[in-house]
Length: 240
Image 1 (cartoon, one colour):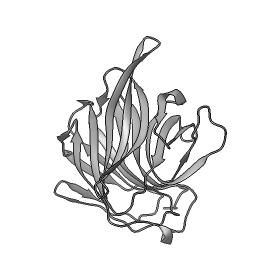
Image 2 (cartoon, one colour):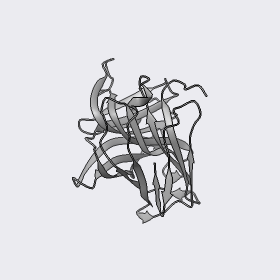
Image 3 (spheres, rainbow, N blue to C red):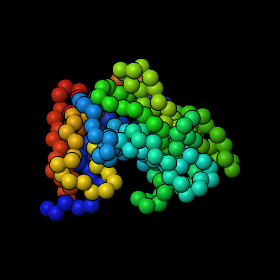
Image 4 (cartoon, rainbow, N blue to C red):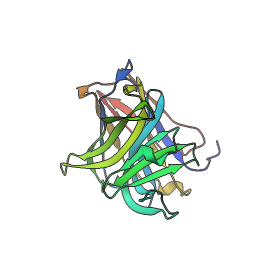
């Protein structure tokens, strides 16, 4: 098949946890075998897709993150290099974003309506935890809304980067039973020889602080992208 335009989802993973769960926190560990060239726009998403009350969200780390710093923003995008990102679909209101100190936000319609928070995260080879945690609930125009906070923790440095927070409708958030991960090349098209060689291991899923290995795992390789990725499962790990 002809290779299409970027973004290229080199592989998508689907994990089924068996049932929907009232949400307090969700965590997944991921290990990177080596560093990569920061000039190549690589997006590693431990949460490629999930749902709170059937509203889609996603997040991970990028080699090149960008966005806006002020509300309302001038049309001056800022670039922070390696970063962590937390996004949701179906919203454009920047009041539903709370960036962390030094962080950025985004509201766009170029891939469908979405909002996002980003922050600098100097990730490299090593093990990390991507974590989402239920935050405060507030009332807006008589309706309850709940904030969700995003974090990346480095096991090597023992440091946590707070990505920022996004708001979802409802006093109770229900986490859908199926969640995804992906590895993506984004930005301008690059030569296939520039796709970085890296092994990413996903493991140690936890829902509400309790170890919750998926009941099933599926790797999907989209057509019309470079057939570059391979995967295997080892015990309670998924290795891409």
